[in-house]
Image: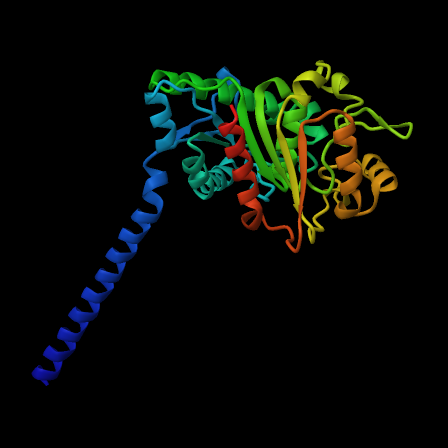
Length: 332
């Protein structure tokens, strides 16, 4: 019996040591995977006094530091967050924004840019306000924490530029902005609202219809976010077509993508969605050629890219965005 007891204790020690080893290996693997991002990303808390009511994350790539050391200006790449969740708990969106930064930091490394990811909430109580898509309601709401999040993002960018300058990194006054799905809608609409701040934009699968830089089509008024007819009344600022048409843009989508934000009332007023359906078609693919033609006729410096055989898949399509930004950087 004592021998059996000793044997059982010995086996338990072996199992315990194996489990400890597995935990150590797991933690080491986690450190290897997360470390390059986790050790370099900076977290900035909400600062209403300075103009932003949500946290944001800033990742400084090694390449951006080399550019700065060589006396060059570094570009900030803004990746709007898109948690896909309605919640008034900021922590929900902070976690998602951190993960979004982790998923994109290799892109920042590849481009040699600084990555900025805001952690705007997508409200639960006022769920009709689709902040992550920068819809019309987000421009007119008086709810303080989400009021004019486009201007809050600009305040974040300005603070990031000051912080980076303090560490010896001078940045371009204009940004790159990219997004896919709801964040693609945000990037698309932010570029319309603030073209003077955008150096280049890549817009993936923008919810079935990219906002077009015109006020009317076939005699019909196109209000935001279908078009720009009421832009000045919403923001107090007229559309700057000269600045907008100077921006290199890529608008891309998979040919099998049927993700259509016009089917949902949190991002579109029913009348505007119905107008787009009536004028351009009932699904994203049927509207594609009309959107492209309107952009080109308006003088936009845009490339429309439809990728055959791909659905609503950001990871499959990200390479087109990254290559586009590379070309812009090469030509600057």
